[in-house]
Amino acid sequence: MAELILKIGSAGPDPFWQDGDVIEAFNNKRILCTHAQHICDHRKENFNRSGLRITNGLSQSFQEKIFEYKFERVSENEVKRTNLLTSEVDIIGLEPNDKGEYMDVKLYIARRKKNINHRIFGDNDAEIWYGGKTNFDKVNDIWDEIEVRTKKKRKDHKRLGAGKIGDRACLCLPVTDFDEERASFLVLHEESTDREAEVPEGEEPPEIMVRSRQHNINWRELGIGLKEGDVLDKTKGIFIPDELTIDEKEKVKRKKKMSKEKRKAIKDARREGRRAARKEAPNF
Image 1 (cartoon, rainbow, N blue to C red):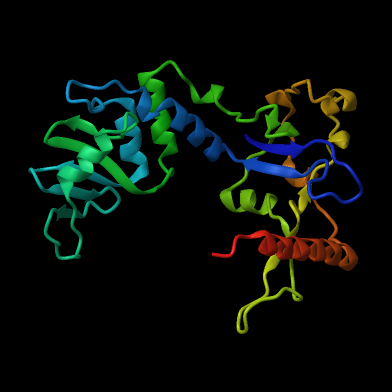
Image 2 (tube, one colour):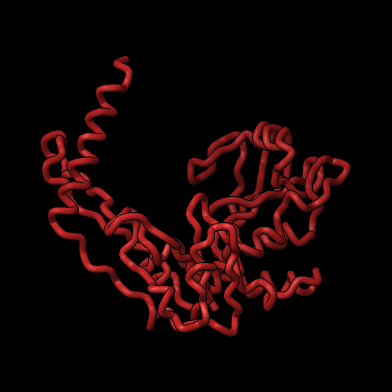
């Protein structure tokens, strides 16, 4: 299962955000990842007597599965960095190593321990932390451990949606699952090249966003019993149960491209806005 967050209500024939626009597209992997991040938040782990996070807890296990590097302090001024994907090991200290990398380990750790939200595990002189890029390909392994260590079950964490996103009333729609490429496609916006923009010689004219989203769902015609008045009432939170999951590929429609006249009007307005901003900017 996945979830689409739809914009509800719009003013005028062609506003920036339109009724039914796909604001966000959360696939099953992203939903599970988000819930796992909250459940395994390092700030939920207790401190030990060294003022560091306890080891072998759920948070450390979570970080070991998502981060690129594990750092382990091995001496007063050195740290061992292990690439968790390739198992490659490097030693980093005050002097540059073969890769030209160096670190003041004592200063690094001291600065981070000052922040109560730090992510340092272990004990004094044997600190452990994680860094580098994050990857959630092991989300199922993460949830296996969550279910072993806690009473939480992934079957109870299939949805993300809320009743509002900022000031925009929205509808959280359960749909069939999709991959990351499809998720990005569903939230594409519409751009247009501003060929009349004032740009330095040799530079390309900027792209201006003329419409927030290219894709839309007519939620009034889904056939799942939604009452228009209830959906449009911003004081009400509409929950659509899992059993009413729809096939998003059958319902998502790509909007007609905006007319040249409309795009020109928007670009003219944006251009004037930039000129006005430059005039008001302080001259240093």
